Length: 213
Image 1: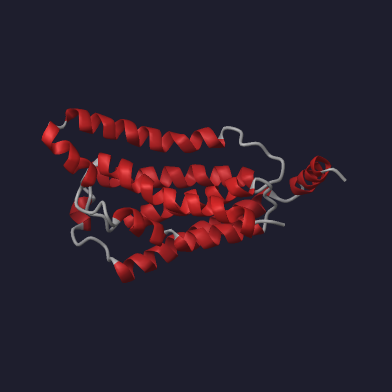
Image 2 (image 1 turned 180 degrees about the horizontal axis):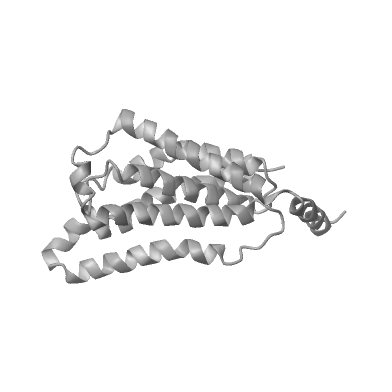
């Protein structure tokens, strides 16, 4: 049997898999990822002491909204990648929307800032640790997302692994925002995305090895 015929046969079989089954697996993976990241954050970093006051700042909700939107688009992408032979559709384009919006906001903030302030807006005071902290908090969601994918039948294994890394990085950054002292959009645009890129790259490498069936 040719590879194309096998994929078509598997795609037909996968079409009979209830959509809710895949959704439930990714929902469970997301819950595990958030809870696991929260436990790690509480044990390693703690919640920022002025969280209640910080909640009055729009950028606090902007960070949460960005991470939540990216996680939602990541789930939409993974739902397609979990089924053999299914194209990306609009899911891949939707994934790019939250980063593009954030980068546009960050560019506007840099344009309005004085020249001497721009480096500080990008680097903040935690640029050395932020990406690695996000990557660390993404570990529970990373493991749970790979578990969810192994219960499906992905054929684009590198893409599926990268998608799992995207979701886990987004959930890790969502939780990390409760600790992070940085409130400048240029900082978030650079270092939050860098933190998400780490599990994405790892997922792309591990996907063909761990998701093979």
